[in-house]
Length: 416
Image (cartoon, rainbow, N blue to C red):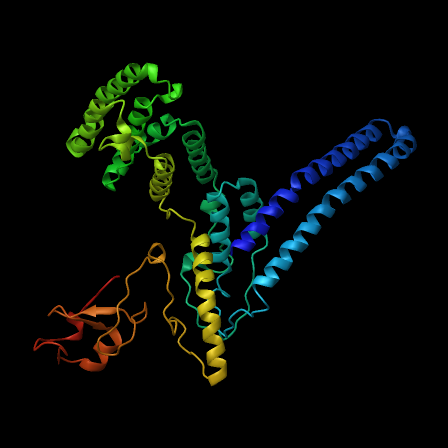
């Protein structure tokens, strides 16, 4: 993939669209100005149109040259992609789980655009998706599809996405991240954390203290004055004053961490050789805090830290080579996999992409699903619902793993 990344970097440098967009906008402004002039004085139309011929032709030539560089670079990028992925067909299946759920796809795309800060693009997409909803025709894939009422066809479930409130929330998030990453300004993030202190504490979040700790470190190491070592005493006094003012509320939960911060003063100016080096000289501290803030901000909105569309796309890309190999083997052996809700092979996803626990029934050796959930008997042993019905035959039965007896109605569903 390194070669593809290198070609992509060349594409972004050699074929920027910004110049082409500026030239197009200049042409539009020139034509708009001419239209307004003709509208004010219709008699000047012949002269105005004659004057426009050469400038418009010249502007079109400039735009053509701009796009020529773009097309050339895109051609090179396309060849690099074709060389890396040599005509490998995508895995095919007769069952498309999302063919009858266009609303879910549209919602995922809309939410991804909002989360990425592409508010104008998200607005245009949501408007078009709402005005022209996709229609699905009945098929073997979706005739038996039982969809929740709130996701019925024609209801894109985008009222929340289209609301100004949600857009403002994400705009605020990006403003806070901009101040934090580029200006080393923690005040907007601290203000937000204090306003949501109750909710953050209920989640067991450390964000508010992490903001205060980094503010202390920033002041201690010079803050806005940089590395002027002649003012070390002033830096220490500013950090100590901040600690006295802000850390009082955190002593019950973070006393040890506060002691480490204040105890580091004894090692100044040799912090690099002190036990507290990892606190005061951590290059990743600001980015880690930005990620922590994003995670907590999204959690209070009821959202995951990462875009579901990004996660699904990345997981699909990881699984694709395995699925392609599986399809080749199945084609050679002329076999098919008929289970819709379970893959025939294990997909080695990284831990960050494993969100749900699974349970394999010890009786049937099959993974449980929403339609066949795990059931816990009074004795504490768990088997799949179908296994429970098969063993009990709607009457009292003996647990397959202990002498305990029970009735199917006494079993309780286990939620993973």
